[in-house]
Image 1 (cartoon, helix red, strand yellow):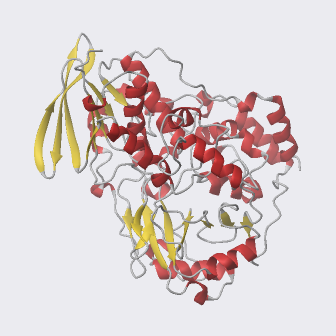
Image 2 (cartoon, rainbow, N blue to C red):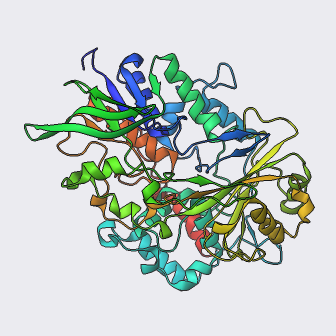
Length: 523
């Protein structure tokens, strides 16, 4: 590649940030030749963290991490210096942190009596075991665009396993059987310890402060151009010897239209689709606005490119049914330790050890998690922050007589106190910021393999896709790892990098792991 070659990355999510790092570290590309074009004012995409202790902190969500998998993610972050621990990498500090604070949930499920549900048994019948084994051994071609409910009987969805697995990974019954099968294989190591979440690893702070900011800081030090408030609206392209070639990038930078010429040796990486597109925030007094595809910006460019080009995938498979892809989260900022103290007494876990607490009989299927404090870099010592979410926010609450979708932050806290049987005064002066995300599980929608493009589509000369909506055999979406692996694959192919990409660790082929999973299934 010419030393004058440039790379343009559309979208500022973790995948494109990772791609820029791989180009510099492994491709020898100069940082000053790389530009990341982000439509918002903040890099990081879905790995966000915003607000302050006065107005309230806000997280749309956090992806589950593990050091037993996530091969490409840790390959990257072994190269990125920590912002918090001088002389250590992000990987080093994460390992150190998790050795000090080891996950061991003692209140994974809570029932309507506010009793901890015994979860040493998965609750399977013999029929459940047979059906689960059949699903996990069926080829993806045979599963095709089927749903989980096409393979498992209704009783399965009342088992302790389903409540824990579904809320850990955010599965719904109507989601893709292929994705569910992939999770069973990719996280088979977690099957035998799902009740304690012992395999879950956490970053020191939220994932924006702990992953995005160190990576962004390193990229800026290499001279990478991080261009914010720059919305890409179209790509000029032509065909050369049957190959698709991007020749120009149309964008609006601070409401001014611009055209970026893409030369023969330049490369373009596109974040196709976004699971947090059209998100909206509420407040203590207002519910989040119900935004739809009309308010969406993250799908349009992919839809334009895919028209008449089946090798570029089928966005409609993922963004056509908000009713099946949305849920709602909430972030609570506290200036009184009473709630954390009572949760410690109730759960038996200190904050940062327990992981998700799911209210099994909640109409909303609500879960909360109390992270180690502080959860934000600038969080004062006398402030606490916790996060929660609900998979069924369209249902009437148990304690609030309307759907979560219509509730403000105060009403969400009322519902939470009802499930915990806490005096509402425990959360007095709390600031709860709800967040509606219409496409948050769109990558789980039933789909065919052809509905997702491979990172570098067949016939593409200089365009690659990086997102949760590309096809990577054996790996699982809704993870940081998926975006980073897609980035590494795209960069290595377009730059011709002769370095092996870390393979997916085949835990599901380990006889030891299989035996432990089998024992768990028959408890």
